[in-house]
Image: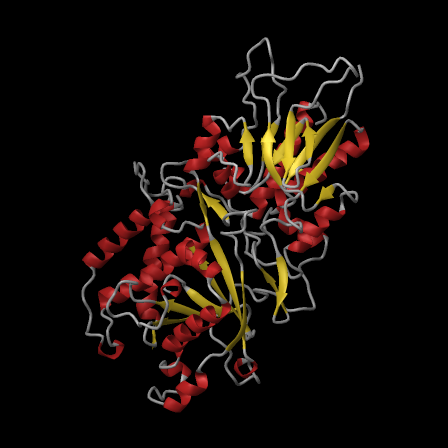
Length: 534
């Protein structure tokens, strides 16, 4: 009988896929026991990592931060390839920006006496949710959402605080409205951090399982793509195939086709179908597509998205369905030259935190569009940069993808005008100066936005543990198919036909690049153990 080398196909050339490919290739090249191939549906490598340039600066359309440098494999690689230094300016090159200026809708600059009590309240509540307050117990919270927990804390705070003096100088604001709006600003930051469009759907119980590396959070001077390009450079030419979008994965959960008696070989158990009509057989397939693509796949239609035949078993499909996967988009705006910092004495665009009236409040400024009202900040990507950045999640993040550039520029400009044109700090104390208001009118020359929600290769940004799901679902995501013990003894299916990697398959590091990295290593090692190579 002719013995074929096992063929391992990895779907997706992002962090998880390239990490798995590197590990497997390093062994395959020495042992010559199997062949490795990476098929990528898009025309570039990187997945949800996508570094580009805008306004002369290096920016990240996707993954941005190394979340803690102590023990991070991403930080280690960045150090090894000297990616942490650059001659070009890059996004957040000076850390998380200067001290923010927080302004309430209408142009009222808020001093620390208004901000700090609410910030402390919010941080204490999140510390409690994340298990950092060891002296207290989280208690039995059932299917409690983080949003519900936070709102309980806010209501308790507002109920115990005394009303202070009238806010005459703050126009339409009063103490209760202001406290609630400042609190909502912090909630909006958490929405983008977690990708949960609605914090009421973010599971409270799972918060304490999420882990971060110790140390500071930094960006990569040469861009996150430098890590991806390094991983790809370690692979031989042709191993990564671009433009190879898989639309159908056929696998054999209960039986295996018999030996081909003409040539004495066994056919491979998995068949991949590509969008161009071609096919490829494999012994093992590592699927690293996003949770968003898997959610579309479990509906089982033939609309051109990825499908499994037979369908994924209920234990896998139910975990995919329960977990959360949100949309977070970034909007970069290039300020016109007259708004750039001209000398050391002139002010650049501020690191602006925005406190909005409720979207349904009669007090809201009518010119501010609805999709701006849950955006927590607009800020230069580093001190005095002419490129400013805003984050949009959930419904407004999706809406941003369909807006024309002109609509975005108008909506952002109207919002900035509402916040800055009447603020004494930004008009030299002359609040009523029509001349100043006209001079400060912000002009944006161009914009660049990410579109993760509608991109068919991603259908969203990153995962979270939703209410009614839990960390066990993340472990279930990582289980290979067919599930061991399910095959009948007369027709045993080949093991490890379909394996799963990606950030949504890591119990404690989901939503991160290092989670994707570790998951790629995990699945590569699973196969190496199967072949007794580690």
